[in-house]
Amino acid sequence: MRVTFQTVNDGIAAVNTAAEQFAKAQRQVETGRRMENPSDDPAAAMRVIQGTNEIATLDAYTRANDTASSRLTVLDTVLGTIVDRLSQAQAAAAQGRGTTADTPTREALAAKLAGIRDGLVSDFNATFRGTALFAGAEVQATAYARVAGVWTYQGDASEVTVDIGRNHGATISLDGQSIAKGGDALDVFTAFDGMITAVVAADEAGMAAGMDALRRTFDRAVRAQSLVGVDMQGVDDEQRNLSSFKLANLQSVSKDRDANLAAAITEMNQADTAYRAALQAVGATAKVSLLDYL
Picture 1 (spheres, one colour):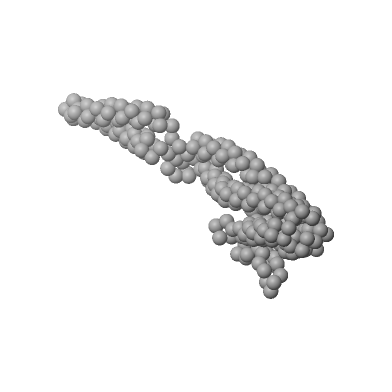
Picture 2: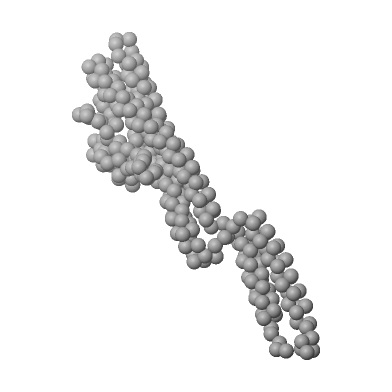
């Protein structure tokens, strides 16, 4: 009778298969990953790459949103201060009009107006993390300075805008001259100087002209602040959208890349059981000697 070892070979193959299944399931449990190599599931691997790239893009927009939000908050605060100073200046100038104010009162009002003007200059020269807020694209420049006795705008007419989404931008640096001067012949600081002189001299026409200039600057500052408010709302809306998009992409990537731990543990246990059974079967078969076939 011819002896065959097919039973033993089949048993060893079953042991190896069970061992491989156990090792694969064990790796999934240990790493939390369903795929070890792109070749395991090429289509899923491609979706994971695309999803990961999209998440990186969304993260970049989120960082831009964070920066824009901070700068816009500062811009809004400074513009609010500018509006308040202009209101205070108009009220102070109004006190100097008429014939009731005496010389000491006028000098005190002039000093108050000079203090408000200096505060306004400081506001227009405000910076955020070392970069100018009201110098347009010249973010390293001081927006306004007195050069040879003349108030001079040292920025440019550009506005700096950053992308906070694929189709959404926010302006984070303003053209200060468009607020301080706009379409007027003189900037607001020069108008302040003229109004201070007019208050001391009891020049009614000069005070009226100065107050009109302040009012126009006030209107421009209010419009600028309203636009900043619109951008702030846009940033908040975009942040929510980015969070939703990122969550959706994370879930999609996880579905393709991550292992189902419960299923992997079950598979590992089943493979362990099959491995032990196959090993036991091979052991029992190996006990058969050649004499059993004679």
